[in-house]
Length: 124
Image (cartoon, rainbow, N blue to C red):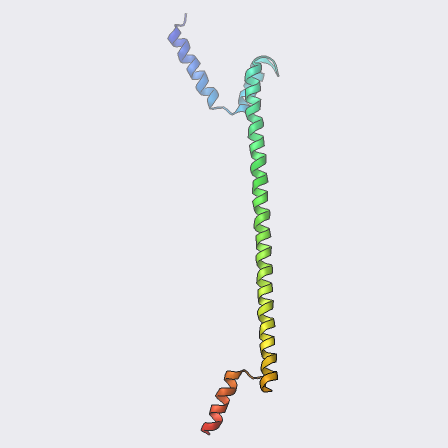
């Protein structure tokens, strides 16, 4: 006959083995031991809640990843739009400056270029 110490030791070993199994594996073992859905109701409920919680967590994490991805794509699009708008404003301001330059001086050459040309003429 087994002593209390031996029984405790065996129970401890069983608990350790059960801790190393996933909830799905634990449910499978219960089904093999007692039959599908028979016996160990509280343990089955506990294991099933762990499985459900794990699935909910996975779903939430997946949704969060998708949300971060969408946010990142949106930010990228907004950044591109801002860069395009900035480039367009620069282009417009340059063309406006050139038009003002032509109206003011009657020449399409930039002011610095005209000055350097005047200096060359004076020296020759």
